[in-house]
Image 1: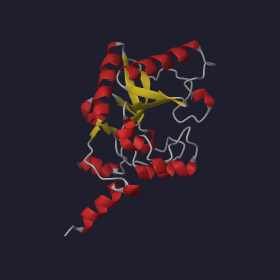
Image 2: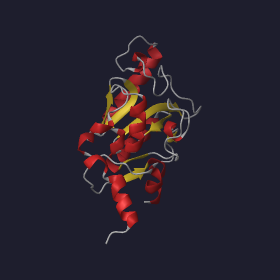
Image 3: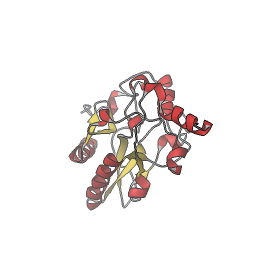
Amino acid sequence: MRSFSNILFLSIVCVQSIVCVEHTLVSLANLDPTISLELRYASINNFMHENLYGHADAFLIKEAAQALIHVQKELRKEGLSLKIWDAYRPLSVQWKLWNRVQDTRYVSDPRKGGRHTRGTAVDVTLVNRKTNKELAMGTDFDDFTPRAWITCMELPEEILKNRKKLQRIMRKYGFRGIKTEWWHFDYKGWQKYPVLDMLFAQLCDS
Protein backbone atom coordinates (compact mmCIF):
# COMPACT_ATOMS: atom_id res chain seq x y z
CA MET A 1 0.00 0.00 0.00
CA ARG A 2 1.38 3.38 -0.99
CA SER A 3 2.26 5.75 1.79
CA PHE A 4 0.67 9.20 1.96
CA SER A 5 4.02 10.82 1.05
CA ASN A 6 4.26 8.77 -2.15
CA ILE A 7 0.71 9.68 -3.14
CA LEU A 8 1.50 13.35 -2.53
CA PHE A 9 4.67 13.08 -4.61
CA LEU A 10 2.75 11.58 -7.53
CA SER A 11 0.07 14.24 -7.30
CA ILE A 12 2.71 16.94 -7.66
CA VAL A 13 4.30 15.36 -10.74
CA CYS A 14 1.11 14.16 -12.47
CA VAL A 15 -0.55 17.54 -12.90
CA GLN A 16 -3.30 18.11 -15.44
CA SER A 17 -3.30 14.50 -16.70
CA ILE A 18 0.38 14.62 -17.64
CA VAL A 19 1.85 11.12 -17.76
CA CYS A 20 4.60 10.48 -15.21
CA VAL A 21 7.87 9.49 -16.84
CA GLU A 22 11.43 9.31 -15.64
CA HIS A 23 12.96 12.70 -16.25
CA THR A 24 16.28 13.98 -14.98
CA LEU A 25 17.03 17.65 -14.40
CA VAL A 26 20.61 18.64 -13.72
CA SER A 27 22.08 21.63 -11.93
CA LEU A 28 23.96 24.07 -14.15
CA ALA A 29 25.94 25.31 -11.16
CA ASN A 30 27.25 21.80 -10.59
CA LEU A 31 28.10 21.24 -14.25
CA ASP A 32 29.87 24.55 -14.82
CA PRO A 33 30.32 27.01 -11.94
CA THR A 34 31.77 29.60 -14.36
CA ILE A 35 28.27 30.33 -15.66
CA SER A 36 26.82 33.35 -13.90
CA LEU A 37 23.44 32.89 -12.22
CA GLU A 38 20.98 35.67 -11.50
CA LEU A 39 17.71 33.84 -11.22
CA ARG A 40 15.14 36.60 -11.25
CA TYR A 41 12.27 34.45 -9.99
CA ALA A 42 14.39 33.38 -7.02
CA SER A 43 14.33 37.01 -5.91
CA ILE A 44 11.87 39.91 -5.91
CA ASN A 45 13.63 41.48 -8.91
CA ASN A 46 10.97 40.42 -11.42
CA PHE A 47 7.67 41.72 -12.75
CA MET A 48 5.78 39.81 -10.07
CA HIS A 49 7.88 41.44 -7.29
CA GLU A 50 7.84 38.10 -5.51
CA ASN A 51 10.32 35.29 -4.85
CA LEU A 52 8.57 32.48 -6.69
CA TYR A 53 11.30 29.84 -6.45
CA GLY A 54 12.78 30.15 -2.99
CA HIS A 55 15.99 28.63 -4.38
CA ALA A 56 18.79 30.11 -6.46
CA ASP A 57 19.94 27.35 -8.79
CA ALA A 58 19.21 26.68 -12.45
CA PHE A 59 18.11 23.26 -13.73
CA LEU A 60 17.72 21.90 -17.26
CA ILE A 61 17.34 18.51 -18.87
CA LYS A 62 20.73 16.88 -19.32
CA GLU A 63 20.87 17.35 -23.10
CA ALA A 64 20.13 21.06 -22.92
CA ALA A 65 22.52 21.56 -20.02
CA GLN A 66 25.39 19.89 -21.86
CA ALA A 67 24.70 22.00 -24.95
CA LEU A 68 24.79 25.13 -22.81
CA ILE A 69 28.17 24.07 -21.42
CA HIS A 70 29.50 24.02 -25.00
CA VAL A 71 28.16 27.55 -25.48
CA GLN A 72 29.95 28.68 -22.33
CA LYS A 73 33.25 27.10 -23.38
CA GLU A 74 33.21 28.95 -26.69
CA LEU A 75 32.24 32.24 -25.07
CA ARG A 76 35.06 32.00 -22.55
CA LYS A 77 37.56 31.99 -25.41
CA GLU A 78 36.21 35.44 -26.30
CA GLY A 79 36.35 36.72 -22.74
CA LEU A 80 32.59 36.39 -22.31
CA SER A 81 30.21 34.34 -20.19
CA LEU A 82 26.59 33.36 -20.03
CA LYS A 83 24.34 34.80 -17.36
CA ILE A 84 21.24 32.74 -16.60
CA TRP A 85 18.04 34.56 -15.67
CA ASP A 86 15.75 31.54 -15.76
CA ALA A 87 15.73 27.86 -16.65
CA TYR A 88 13.41 25.12 -15.38
CA ARG A 89 10.18 26.52 -13.95
CA PRO A 90 7.59 24.46 -12.05
CA LEU A 91 4.13 24.37 -13.61
CA SER A 92 2.64 25.84 -10.44
CA VAL A 93 4.80 28.95 -10.95
CA GLN A 94 3.81 29.10 -14.61
CA TRP A 95 0.20 29.38 -13.49
CA LYS A 96 1.08 32.32 -11.25
CA LEU A 97 2.75 34.15 -14.13
CA TRP A 98 -0.16 33.38 -16.44
CA ASN A 99 -2.69 34.69 -13.96
CA ARG A 100 -0.83 38.01 -14.00
CA VAL A 101 0.01 38.25 -17.74
CA GLN A 102 -2.29 36.29 -20.04
CA ASP A 103 -0.40 37.14 -23.21
CA THR A 104 1.16 34.20 -25.05
CA ARG A 105 3.74 36.46 -26.66
CA TYR A 106 5.45 36.62 -23.28
CA VAL A 107 4.00 33.94 -20.99
CA SER A 108 3.12 30.42 -22.14
CA ASP A 109 -0.40 29.19 -21.45
CA PRO A 110 0.02 26.57 -18.67
CA ARG A 111 -2.99 24.67 -20.03
CA LYS A 112 -0.73 23.82 -22.98
CA GLY A 113 2.18 22.91 -20.76
CA GLY A 114 4.67 25.67 -21.42
CA ARG A 115 8.34 25.68 -22.32
CA HIS A 116 10.34 26.40 -19.16
CA THR A 117 8.18 23.79 -17.43
CA ARG A 118 9.89 21.05 -19.44
CA GLY A 119 13.41 22.01 -18.40
CA THR A 120 14.23 22.78 -22.02
CA ALA A 121 14.08 26.59 -22.06
CA VAL A 122 16.62 29.05 -20.77
CA ASP A 123 16.70 32.84 -20.47
CA VAL A 124 20.23 34.20 -20.91
CA THR A 125 22.38 37.20 -21.64
CA LEU A 126 26.09 37.77 -22.17
CA VAL A 127 28.58 39.11 -19.64
CA ASN A 128 32.10 40.50 -19.98
CA ARG A 129 34.18 38.20 -17.76
CA LYS A 130 36.72 40.87 -16.82
CA THR A 131 34.24 43.55 -15.78
CA ASN A 132 31.35 41.20 -14.91
CA LYS A 133 29.09 43.66 -16.73
CA GLU A 134 26.31 42.58 -19.06
CA LEU A 135 26.67 43.38 -22.74
CA ALA A 136 24.16 45.98 -23.90
CA MET A 137 21.05 44.28 -25.29
CA GLY A 138 18.62 47.18 -25.35
CA THR A 139 16.23 46.00 -22.64
CA ASP A 140 16.21 44.23 -19.32
CA PHE A 141 14.80 40.75 -18.76
CA ASP A 142 11.01 40.44 -19.06
CA ASP A 143 10.55 43.66 -20.97
CA PHE A 144 7.10 43.21 -22.48
CA THR A 145 7.54 45.71 -25.32
CA PRO A 146 8.43 45.45 -29.03
CA ARG A 147 11.90 46.78 -28.17
CA ALA A 148 12.69 43.31 -26.77
CA TRP A 149 11.70 41.58 -30.02
CA ILE A 150 14.56 40.10 -32.02
CA THR A 151 13.02 41.68 -35.10
CA CYS A 152 13.43 45.18 -33.64
CA MET A 153 16.07 46.94 -35.74
CA GLU A 154 15.59 50.46 -34.34
CA LEU A 155 18.46 50.03 -31.91
CA PRO A 156 22.12 51.12 -31.76
CA GLU A 157 24.51 49.04 -33.82
CA GLU A 158 26.31 47.74 -30.74
CA ILE A 159 23.09 46.29 -29.35
CA LEU A 160 22.15 44.67 -32.64
CA LYS A 161 25.64 43.16 -32.85
CA ASN A 162 25.41 41.76 -29.32
CA ARG A 163 21.98 40.27 -29.93
CA LYS A 164 23.20 38.70 -33.16
CA LYS A 165 26.18 37.16 -31.34
CA LEU A 166 23.92 35.65 -28.70
CA GLN A 167 21.48 34.26 -31.27
CA ARG A 168 24.28 32.85 -33.40
CA ILE A 169 26.11 30.95 -30.67
CA MET A 170 22.96 29.60 -29.05
CA ARG A 171 21.68 28.40 -32.41
CA LYS A 172 25.04 26.73 -33.12
CA TYR A 173 24.53 24.40 -30.15
CA GLY A 174 20.91 23.47 -30.71
CA PHE A 175 18.89 26.32 -29.21
CA ARG A 176 16.29 28.42 -31.01
CA GLY A 177 15.11 31.87 -30.04
CA ILE A 178 11.60 33.28 -30.12
CA LYS A 179 10.42 36.48 -31.77
CA THR A 180 9.31 38.47 -28.75
CA GLU A 181 12.13 37.89 -26.25
CA TRP A 182 15.78 38.23 -27.28
CA TRP A 183 16.86 36.38 -24.09
CA HIS A 184 14.66 33.26 -24.47
CA PHE A 185 15.92 30.05 -26.09
CA ASP A 186 14.36 26.59 -26.47
CA TYR A 187 16.44 23.47 -26.86
CA LYS A 188 15.73 21.49 -30.03
CA GLY A 189 12.86 19.02 -29.75
CA TRP A 190 11.51 20.68 -26.60
CA GLN A 191 7.94 19.62 -27.44
CA LYS A 192 8.73 15.93 -26.86
CA TYR A 193 9.71 16.41 -23.22
CA PRO A 194 7.11 16.13 -20.45
CA VAL A 195 5.84 19.02 -18.37
CA LEU A 196 7.00 18.89 -14.74
CA ASP A 197 5.89 20.45 -11.50
CA MET A 198 8.74 19.34 -9.29
CA LEU A 199 9.44 21.77 -6.48
CA PHE A 200 12.98 23.11 -6.23
CA ALA A 201 13.37 21.57 -2.79
CA GLN A 202 12.72 18.17 -4.35
CA LEU A 203 15.29 18.80 -7.08
CA CYS A 204 17.91 19.73 -4.51
CA ASP A 205 17.22 16.53 -2.59
CA SER A 206 17.25 14.30 -5.66
